[in-house]
Length: 530
Image 1: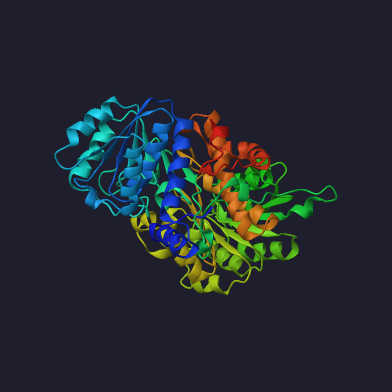
Image 2 (image 1 turned 135 degrees about the horizontal axis):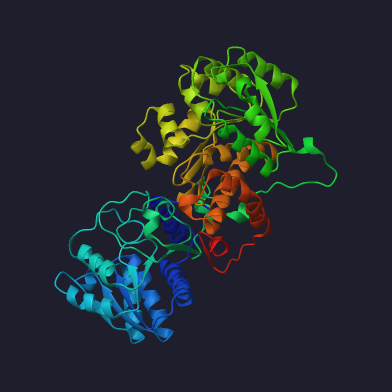
């Protein structure tokens, strides 16, 4: 599903009205009617207060108020304006329609907030229809005090399109805003609905189809990953182990043997036909005793890490092997010999996933961007925020606040696929597509979860092709973490728990069927995870 910014939504909305010919009042009616259906399904209440702004978001709120009134609910409407002259035409029209049905509306300006506060205290539910996706924070004046009243006294809050006060185009917080139990947005989700910390204040997000003409959004290549659109690996009866790929994992050093082991185990769990691990010879016994189905290949070592001859040996191993992809860097350490290993791997004509110390080594090579540009096979980099900072020279703050742009710029500059890991994971492609994953949880903020991902991706970029493999792999990884969190205290979760839940995650994705009813949840798997 596409993920929009405010100007993109406004463009589609305006052209649907002017060019496609669907009147704005029809779009507003579609929005309010379906939103009211969701509210009536999700909440058990008798008294509701609708707090509306003067613009079209307030008009949506007035349509909702009418349908709640028709459903037999007690509804009070407060419009944050001191005169009807300041209302948008569609807002005013729906105000008049609401009144014709017997509804009562209070215009609430600077000096009339006490009545609003009393109504919010008495209500079972508040509908926040003050500001829509076009609003630029911060909130000022008496509208700010109205939001303070909602946050202080409301027993439950439904945000119309977006919690009032949030910026649509970022996950960052600027000033005061409402905190919603659910948010009902229109046509497509927006950036603030999925990015932290803003998304924490949206609650459950539902997307309502209001008949926006999708032709005006064809150029948008920004998506939220959804389970119904993922491609899953399949096995044929007439096949053998080499049908499903042979992944070579390269990594490990003294004190960090667990990293490539977890990568190898997750590769097997996600469907690789064979997995081999090239490791420093001094540590080979650890891998031999830790891995059963996966094979270890010892190479030259020195002081618990790769030795001087390792680069040439790995070149020969790849030349003589039947490998289909490589995952490199997990627990590798950083030194002169590992730099040479990375320079050699980049020259290999095979899909490569570069993770962890692979990225740290890469960042120390003066011409690494040129080396990446020259590669013809797919190259995938999986940096967390700190590693992306080393690659780009940007501060962690700059990257966190601009994950999409940072990933896209790096992909465009180097021709690589980037899986930028954070509280949300963003995938960017050399062609300019961006995918956001909403799967995963804070229990995964522990050592080794990135190593697990590198094994999954190394497997699936061969099994499914690079772009589909990254989309499915990132979602699968997060879903395994969410399934683990369902059964294990998040404080106690370990990276190896994710590996154990990969089979369940594959089962759930394989059996999932979408249920479309003019609206859908941004997280359709939530019921399965409760």
